[in-house]
Amino acid sequence: MAGGLVTWPKLFLLGDSQTQLGFSDSGCWLSIVANHFQRRCDVLSRGFSGYNTRWLKLMLPRLIDAELAKTCAAITLFIGSNDAVALPESPQGVPLPEYKQTVKDIVQYLLDLNVSREKIILISPPPVDADLWSVSLTKKGVPPKHGLSNERTCTYAAALCDVAQELGVGSIDLYTEMMKSEEWRKYVSFDGLHLAKEGSQLLSELVIRKLEKITSDCEVIFPDWKELDYENLSSNFS
Image (cartoon, rainbow, N blue to C red; front, side, top):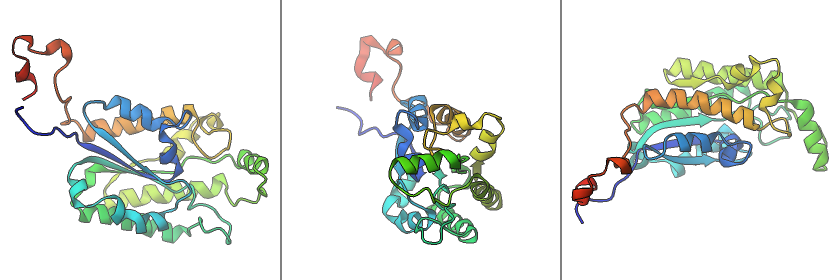
């Protein structure tokens, strides 16, 4: 059979639970993105629930190397919800200055793999409904002292966008986009932290808008079935 194995450009999506849940019923933004780019790009989801930038930075060499980076049409980094935890005893919380520097270090690692700046998109953490989060913890039998607040998350979202501007990479200020609505709580799920379907829909629209510009040269691979040359089928797949 003529020709070798066909591979698709990769959309590499890195982050915490907001990415891990990207194929779930409510946090379905990744499902929408993957559906949009069918036959143009493969989606690689690398989301790790509960993780912060400190841990993700250490994991990064195990997740992407120079060979994989060559195949990536775009890379997103969606992280900060756990870094913004304020409790001193929590291993998840990361001080704001360290958060900013670690995001810089992660981006620099990607740049060192020869990923171009225009292929990198940083996504800010979304707003937090602290009251709902407390209720969610209480139902799980966990004391509602959780160290999360919308005001604190706002500072981490702004810091991430500042880093993106400083480094010349793309960004999506999801926090601000959601807070534009007086009914922003509709965007977060019953636990107050993760995305509801409405939030996933909003994020997917923002991500697709960015990715369309980056992946404009990623065309559909193999013709539509209606466009096949039925008289010489093998010519369609060589």
